[in-house]
Image (tube, one colour):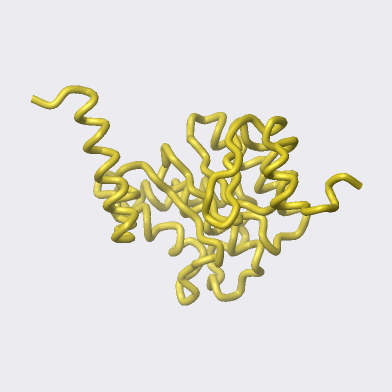
Length: 193
């Protein structure tokens, strides 16, 4: 008989195996949503059809319910007017929002965001920042990979900093911001100036 510890260990093994195989359906069923550093949308589909791709993989949701949910998410992201537009017509920032929307359709427990603010207009960045805060306040765990240190320090309660693949600091934002190894790795000799 498996106890709570065994169950957690099995779930962790399943998550790691699915991530390694890039089995996105299993990750989604486990409650894990993710974005990509290079935004990925189905360019030949409309914005609404892009939203439905992940939702319809969930057999518990009818097509009608998925469509209603998609319209609600598009409204939250201010993309309603683009619902019937081909995804290929979106700007880079709009495509990032569409990717956010597809993640939101999954109601994930864990959200992995890889460089979500890269190349995004400052106004859109603020909007995305607010959506990340809303996700977190709704109970989702956010794992944010970013070089945008202002956003990292503003959004995260825990910051893990890597240099050449090695962890050089792990702690609250203020501790990491002042860590000598972080200052040396990211600011070099200029941090004293």
